[in-house]
Image (cartoon, rainbow, N blue to C red; front, top):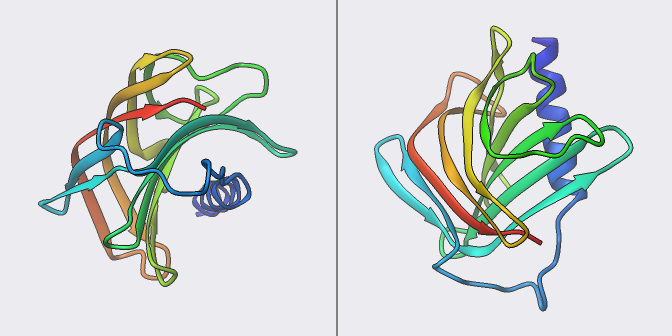
Length: 166
């Protein structure tokens, strides 16, 4: 439970503290996206797509995010990593490797879901197939728990992303 709370706190902190404005704050580009099936429903996020590596006082992380401006929702994937060791292509699910895959789904200001850990594994699996100076692309799957009611879960299947790197 302590590890779940730590991962949730670090994830929320890194997402809130590291929001990057793009030009005038509005970018809608359907060639860049995060897509997946959330509890059996197809979802797509292509507004304000972004991926970037951040280093803070506590941790370093590679954040990938996009929004659905119609539903006022944001979905983000994050890979917390050791300082000085960047994220590269490969699979991320084990916490013991020094990398912690995490994510969240936020609708408006009231409803939020985030990843957690089960038996030293994240509840999200992120696989990066392409990572260069302009693009990151790959797949993801797993589940997110409601941050207020942990019995409420969103199962994610067929997740894929293609985002600009900033």
